[in-house]
Length: 421
Image (tube, rainbow, N blue to C red):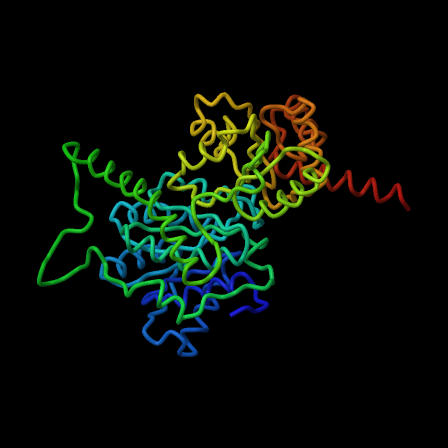
């Protein structure tokens, strides 16, 4: 049903339509509204067969999910940022045990320094945990991906993270065609777990595995992810047949048919990028965009096919690997090895910094003029950086960099405001 609704509530209603039997919840911004709405739905009797567990930590929430999923219950949770890190040990256990848990991650920066706004550092930190990772461009796709996530997770017996940008999507109110229970019932089969705790057929879950078999077990986890490369597009097609809209899949090309340059990104920034692409197309530039939905598994062949006719690409990402550079960028370069494509890495939007059309136009102008540095931090304030580097050069006891930078920025703003009086 189409309605004006907050992204978090749209996700909660989509998850509810999938009829989870256990929801283990611990609130942390910006995912709190999701689990609050799930709680309200359970309390109002909208989910009569669901046990809602108020946990005391994120680690406890994922641990409860592991127990309930192992017992054969369709299981859901949500988290963000420091919460995802706190449950990291259990996150790895869930995938290692092959449990089809679905988890929303409302992407948020990781501290220190403390920051509650959006970037994608949290999920990127868990990219090798064995979970599938699907990134939503808008709230419609966020709602739809959760319905598909249960289908994918339960078919493969692997956990799935649905990643949606915190605040930008979770707290945005827009029109969403919220998946309804009748449609979901036609698309999502009743849950039949591939493994279950059964007293009549006892098994060990979480057994000790030594060097004689550990590599083989880990390879099987990789093999399952490779199977998902075929399953995800199939699920996307079946979803479109039932719901009549095209959500999900591995990648989403935009105006790349004759493009020389392609801009690659994940998540909500794709909306702004598409607007800029349209404006530059109107001016005659051959430029397109490629949104990556499935980051795990990484769709190497689909990306190679999408970029087969282009000359260069620019990767824009809301996280990076300190000491080397872009994470998504390195994946794209690996996927396109041998294709001899020129490329640039652009780190943008860290800690919630806006990625504006003006900044993107300037960025693409620099690339077109061959003036763009290979690794670029979009809208980096060099004055703040240089001031702190100078401070550290002058004094060994220069103090915490974060506090110094914030204080310098405030002093600069106060000086500017005083000059206007």
